[in-house]
Image 1 (tube, helix red, strand yellow):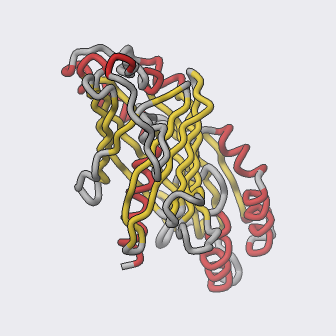
Image 2 (cartoon, rainbow, N blue to C red):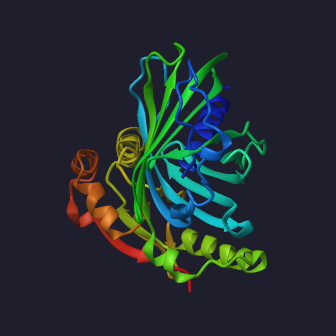
Length: 328
């Protein structure tokens, strides 16, 4: 049940990172009077900045409104394409982190009568649309207020989209369980435009062209990634090595910021000529080589590097390879 609860919470929160974004600038406890229809601003193009492919780095508070400070990092890609000549957008999210892989899809539709956008989100694992969220932008800043269930109670949700430039923007989500008097941030994200992917294909209004180009972009996002491959030769004490590696080193490494995925070899490692002296291979995935450099300059990366010398102190029994990867 804990795993299911975490999935539901992650689904709810990561729907937010797809809110790139509309918002309702109003107080949840006392909504101001609406302006006359003639004064409503046409917000049809408020989402235009969002078209393209983005790299997303986010931090998620696992247990909000409980006093917990247990944050995890999630990194991935957001791809947005317009439909109906910009009056709607389809957005796909993929992220990875220490809590696993996540995929979600959001649909945005503009209502020209209300001058507002609606957003509906679905988690690929659950397959159920959430309740639409509705709102607008004002003065270049997005704010959205809504409600959702948390631990059996209905709470308020506040989303703030800020620092919008052609190549980046920032998102913060907060929860309130006291009617909006106080707010606790539980999800923060920075989105940076993927220049190579965003500029590789020009988006057109034709839906058929969208479908094929979107599929090729999705394949590119999944195959272009930097890797760190760490090779360990057979240690003198296999049991002590495995105990330290899986109980101490792997949990440390999973805290490294920017880590997309962590794989470890399972079973004997052979060569075409037969058995080898390689005992274990670890493969760490990042967005690019710059992300690896940044990750291991962080306190978490340095801690993992220092820990390696505790269970594999002999550099002759240890090899590391760093490289970008692409499908051919």
